[in-house]
Image (cartoon, rainbow, N blue to C red; front, side):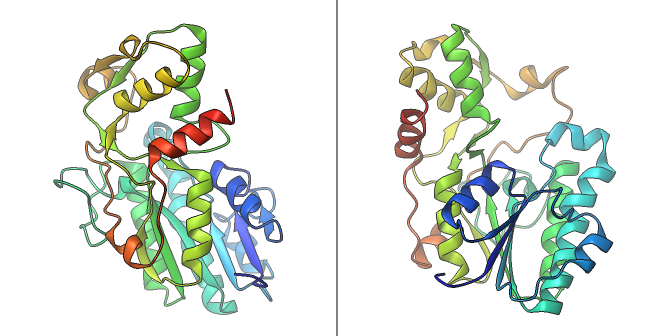
Length: 280
């Protein structure tokens, strides 16, 4: 993508920061720079000369979405629709980030791109609507679904790292499985895919799927803690009184199309080593 004028939206989030690090020449806009949920703001923004827009802006608070659905739909569904209209008008490629929460997690094994949309809650439904709006727009687009993002900011690995250092012995869900996706690896894949792929593709780090409990054990071990200090708990027991939104039990995305596109992702364990090595 050398010489391509790029714009990163949601630049103040974990993925947005990784994308701006990967493309320092890109125009980086946080919500203060462009509120994608505002049709007037997007319609009035001058995208002249921009060839690709990476939309990493999203309402990602899964439980809060259940109590403020309008806010989630404004950013996750209407926002992509506004950007797709702009993409159609200005002729840029829209690279839009989505999530495995558009699925209910009941499918066996890794889920391919053509798995039927069946979200369990407001967050997933709003992201599914955003996908549909982009596809229906007729604009040139690439929709990337990912899962369990870990980057520079608040995330599961950061929380488990803090708890390990504090001497805590947390209870962590052991009946939801997926693969972590490290923001730097995801950003590199997005930049690569923008030059070669269209449609919808799944991107996570590679490797054997793991539960949240298993991932927490890996983090504890890397900080010199006994992995058995992380106690397993079922989703039902953990969610009681804590979580409003239902979570998919299976978050494992099939990476076959990504591999055929010529993009290889590092294993999540190797990526975790690199991530923790830079922060320990």
